[in-house]
Image (cartoon, rainbow, N blue to C red; front, side, top):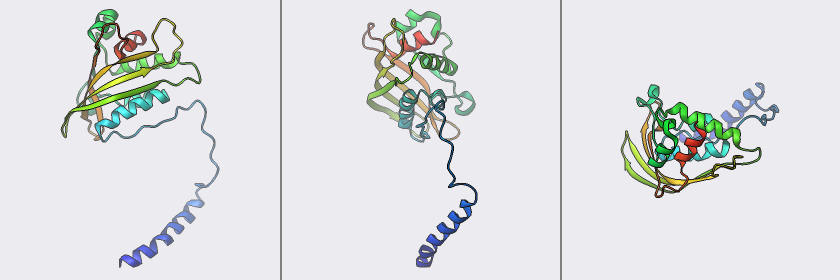
Length: 201
């Protein structure tokens, strides 16, 4: 029985290809518009995929994919929370008072507007540690380096620090960040919090 099924399979493929050929599947497609942002998004069925998607979002400067990394109360049952470094909290004052998922979108879009054409931001997580992993919650800690080749002379183009990510799966089974704590070892280090403080105003 197995042998017959195996031998029949190529015929099914040929038949399927023949039926699809009349639907235009083999016709030449229009080239992708240069204005369309490339996408390297992977469904985050594992917590670690969220970090990969964040890195790809910066490389592609894809706001939609970047926002997918953060909890939405409608699908995850939690609202996203960001906790900046104490230095950034005092330096940027009210910027972080009501920081939410929409704030992530605003600062990301502001960065995009300051990146010259042909330049590519890079986000690297040098060390990633799994502090906790359960079926309904995970905690990761990562050392990061964010490089932004923007056009503003008064703002550093590189941020470094340590991030703690608290993740939960949403109702679709995709992991999202619901709490993000930014940590620095020195008040003089330009961190991700400083990036958000500068571009989130």
